[in-house]
Length: 257
Image (cartoon, rainbow, N blue to C red; front, side):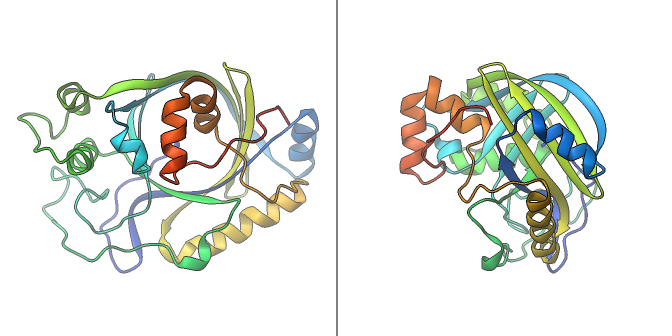
């Protein structure tokens, strides 16, 4: 979720912002050796704190919208793919006068799988505020459009999760591999591709699955992400509500790979 790209003018089958196609996996000491054998390049090591926000009744996360503030980076809203609808990551008003009323576009049904997920990144402050107000059924206040901090404060959003991640980031061709160790004792990896067009999703999934096999991954079910494990351990009521809404799956195994 660190990467973002310049907004594009949406067209048929085209995204207005970056979209992640990813597969999570548990990893162990041998994973780094396998990555090296496959020609992976270590791009960076970093440590960062992420804080996630929602209203007390968890309206945002129950709708699978995740508002995150990354220390030193800023705000991002990660959400299911909706293109060309109000609140999608269309270009900011400061960048274009193009106001869309195009139909909603969604990924082809056959691109979903039990081990890969797809999310859109919304990074434009104006579009983040628009989505938040739409989900919470509130009208934007004065001076909110380009100030997520102001909107967060006046909408009553509060931090429900905050943790530090130690990340090693690798690149293999146009795929990225992140190996994360979190300060609450969970270790998880992720193979990811970033696409700009809907029609590129099947190819991205195919590349991820091919590389996963080369890496020796054999998981047939979805591996829980950091947030699922955090909520299961420290926010059980929130976790139960999200399971009931079908947003997260039951965390069965949270041991290190």
